[in-house]
Every structure is written in C-alpha cells, then in structure tokens.
Length: 284
Image: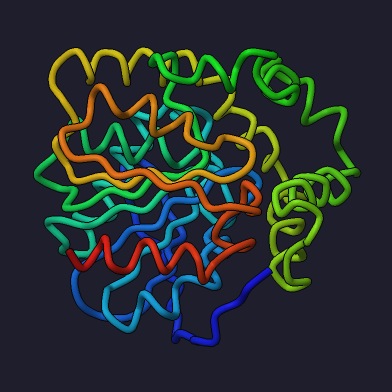
C-alpha cells in the first residue's frame, strides 16, 4: 500500500438535504470536489486523498445516506434519490458546480447526477463499479455477479445473520479489496465501528435492494441524452475496464485507465497512483 504524506485540516459538518442529515467532511478551499464512497466504507475511505486534493480544491466528502454518521433513512437508497442528496449538499454549501469522484456504490450516483444535471458536474471520475444493465460488462459478469450481491439483496437476511459479526465481515472486504495488503488500523476500526452501529447494515444492504430501481433510472437517463461531462473511468481488480466499456457508447468525452496490481479499494490501496491520474484530470 503506497501512502501519501499530506495531512489535511478536516471539519465535520451535519448538512440537511433531501429529508436527511448528512455527515460531511470538508477540507481546503477552491473549486469544489465531491468524493463519494461505497461499501463497506465511510468518508474515511478518502483519508489518503483529501490532504493532497485540499491543497488545490474545496473537498466535500459525505457519508452517503444511511452510512457512517448520516441519517439512517427508512428508504431512498436508489441512485436517483442519492443524487438529489448530493445536489442538496452542494446547494447548502453554496457550490453551483463540482467535480465528482466516486467509487463502488457511489459511482451510479455520480453518473446519474452528471446525466441529469450536467450543469452541476464539471468533471467526473468513476471507479470500480458497474452501471446497472448497460452493455459492456458481459466479460466481468460471465460467471455471475459477486456472491454477496444476492446475499445482501434478500430483505432482512444479511443484517440478521451478521449481527455481532460485523467486524469479521467488514475485515474480509477490506482484505480482498486490497489484494491482501489491508488498510491502516485506524481506518479499519472506523469502518467496523460505523457498520456495527444500530441499523447500519440494513441501510448498507438497502443499496443492493435498490439496484433494479437504480438500473432503470440510469437506462432512462441514458435514453434521454449522452453523458457530456468529461469523464475518467479508473479500474483495478476485479472490475478492470468493464466500467469504461459501459461508458464508452454513452460518453462524449471519456478516458480510461486500469491501475495494475491494485485492489478494488483504490483510494486506500494505491492512493499515489490514483492521485497521479486524478490531479491532472481535474486540473485540465
């Protein structure tokens, strides 16, 4: 795991948006850059990234709906509702536009926001995720989706079975997501604590239960028009270039890159390499 030396002064703020209170990490000044995490993460996923970015940008890293210290909402875990959450955070912070960087479950949210509101998204960086049923991911899905997609999708099952075993479950994802290298102990502990809190697993698995709705929302948005925001698709192991292939037919301005010997959790496994791609793209 290659690490970055930069530290950042981070402010945590509760921001009301779309019927919830979002926990948002803020750092730096300049053009806004929004960072959207996935599962099993919180805003702490970006711990190695926020410092270098905040030297040039105003970094806005929320805990997504239901995650971390953000409201445990009863519903609204589809990409469309989540995109509205993010737009509301930008409104509350007085930011008319932002670059958006997203990974995993945050990626459909970021893409849908850019499709629906291209006036709000200056540049888009997306990583290690699939976009619903858009063509291009057939090779990745040849053996079927990852096993946990089905496990998480059954209402009421996974959160009941895993009760009391959250730490082991989260650690498994952190280990395979860094190809065995692991993450810093303080970040690991923060993730475990976040997902061991009351109702946290139910909220996390609600993202998987909303995947069919999110897929339909993306299909409708693509049918209405192309993705015009300049976009960078970054892959690693296991998604590789599948996301880039899905985006290629719908994106007007797309670059793609796969980071070698890098696990799924790119911002913690290869932060230097990620910054080497993201910084010049954001500055272009």
